[in-house]
Length: 253
Image (cartoon, rainbow, N blue to C red):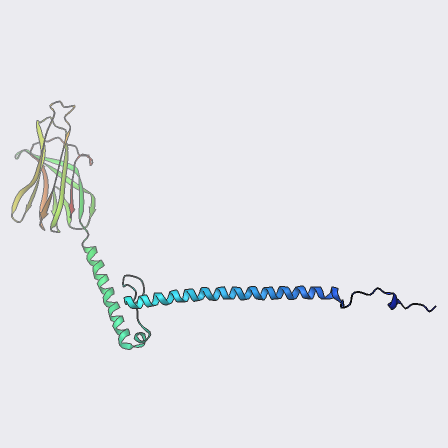
């Protein structure tokens, strides 16, 4: 009996199974590549749709600005010019002239606002002087708060350099047993002297309780060169020199 060949004794696989185990990795790679390509195409389509939507939104915004005549001058940027207008030398020159005029108006407006700063002067006492011959006590002032150059403290008077309407207020804290005490705020200027307002307060007769303040205020039109003063129509009047008890102030309205 002849000997069998090894190739004849080897088990035979099913028909068509030629190199099956070697082809399975290649098939998996092909499937993954096809899925990746499909996902990439979907992502590109989504991005394209998003860009188209944004482009349509920009087009609508451009059309709205063209109908409205361009951006507001109050906003940062330049007036809206079409492509043809931008290429026109006359249009560019007109825009530059308008821009220069706008900046000039803005500078003048800012300068005018700076000049219109309201003058403020708040004064506190530093000394008092009694005039025996006129039965009067005067108060000497110094600035505690000042803004602007329209008002100036000059010893016993306040000089007005900037004419206008002012709020004028005054308070004096008395420590006197005289039955009534008070102050008079007067103005001297333009060749005449007048009383703007006066304040009168009753005082206790007991020296330990004889403390009372007198406050008054008003609105007045003051002229350039006016001199304002506060006087107490009592000789040797006793009053407090504390800044929170006795003061004088003017505010331009």
